[in-house]
Length: 251
Length: 387
Ligand SMILES: Cc1cc2nc3c(=O)[nH]c(=O)nc-3n(C[C@H](O)[C@H](O)[C@H](O)COP(=O)(O)OP(=O)(O)OC[C@H]3O[C@@H](n4cnc5c(N)ncnc54)[C@H](O)[C@@H]3O)c2cc1C
Image (cartoon, rainbow over the protein chains, first blue to last red):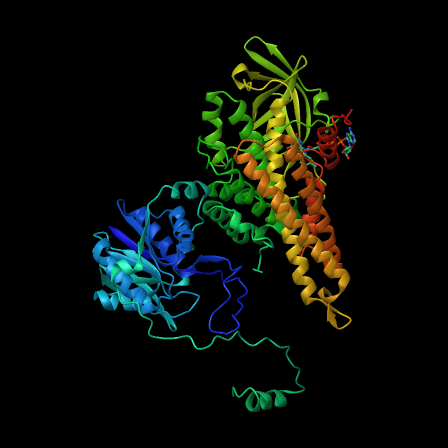
């Protein structure tokens, strides 16, 4: 079977983010870029399925600038078979991402699409759901466990929901989005990195796909979280309750 | 600047995609697998055996060698790997150096096809550990004076002598032992358990405590003729290996330096004295600026050396220059960082004192700082000050 894994290039979560002077985007010089951590988990899951089910092909897909090659190459070094990069310099919103994926599903015909539950840069958490909707496929989001049926016709997916776990049975083809506890991704091994150099990485200009990617939203303003200030000591329980009520307004 | 990175001169842009991926991969391996355990290993004077197995799975051992199960990385990628290992601990980088650049390289470069097929894939996979026995109790900087002897006896060789300060000695499955046959230095593969061969650990080290250092004793050790490294004759044999290891150290030291610098920087920004962060005082800033300058210079040295090595034009003296300069800079940075941390600089809650003590070994082994001075002095003046 074929698994399509979607991969986004995002700033390293450890990077200290600075805003541009006009305040609607971040300064990207000197930022270290990584695979979106949830996408890395999705890649790992695909590779584990491949290790169990012989003949599985894992195809990576990224949409973005040429620099996203590095993240795709990292995924190939982890063990994916080939990669597709849809090239564009413009900002691609979740709906546009979903449409591009829909388009490529038409040619690639995967049985399973694995994605991160969200990208850690804009935290939209909707591309996976939109892909499922556009394709009319079942979806299982926030997966913490994926068990593929022996006949490869369906899967059991455990989801992390508020206060517990929910297990769904879904027929394939389907869209599954990965949550943090699904697995612990492997490191790209050094021999794997050398092998990845020879794997196929196909580039497709976004314009060639004929997909409507016009933005529907505009970022008005970004703000960094307020600086943490030191705590304050209160004299008594009574005063504590008072402060929590009057100032913090939490009780 | 990014958390956890020092790249003041955008040297990242000088790297290829797979070099960057290599660095990122080894780096997250070290952060997630090594940092949580290394301080404890160091405190207990314990070799992190489990970690070694995982380093092997990552493909660390002999990573710049071609064939025989090795990754075949560029030398710059290999250097970056060493830098990330040593950002964790010099002992981990030592393990990589001794296994890959000394023991495996000796077999790869000077061994017979049969020796290569037998040992290299096993060593790359970490199933066999190697060590490299050159130094003796009475012969360190002057290995040519070695007293270990090899004598031909029919179809075998008989080895006698003592090697000291041998990394991995007591855990090695195969020891590359250098010995004199008459006046010619030759290399032998001595397998674990060979009668007459024993290894004893050196205890009480204040430095490289997460690495094993042993004495090897050879008493009428009989090895088959097939265990002689056929290609090596004379000091050129061991020196070619040292050259590989020194190359890795020139990169590795920068990793230790980076950890110390970043720890000191963060500490100085947080630590307040006289109502201000100590990073706001000129004397502290001078130290931090010196550190970042030396690291940046060292990165450029190492990068250029790597490109020369990839082009096959690197001279041993150029390796001496980088090993000498970068290790001295790293030790200096570690000492300054320790100073900036004040009393916190002497406890293992911070990694600085561990790196500082480790670097006292790094400046001594693989040619002491002063021996490299003399090698370079001889090269530029044409006058030999070594003897
Ligand atoms: C932790 C550790 C691990 C090691 N691992 C290995 C290993 O795996 N394999 C191995 O073979 N060896 C290993 N070594 C040994 C190391 O390579 C030697 O310690 C090193 O070569 C220096 O030799 P020495 O200690 O005998 O010092 P010496 O050679 O006695 O030097 C002492 C001092 O004299 C100076 N000196 C010597 N000659 C001159 C001269 N002509 N002019 C001016 N100054 C001079 C030196 O620079 C130094 O300052 C290891 C050492 C350590 C500490």
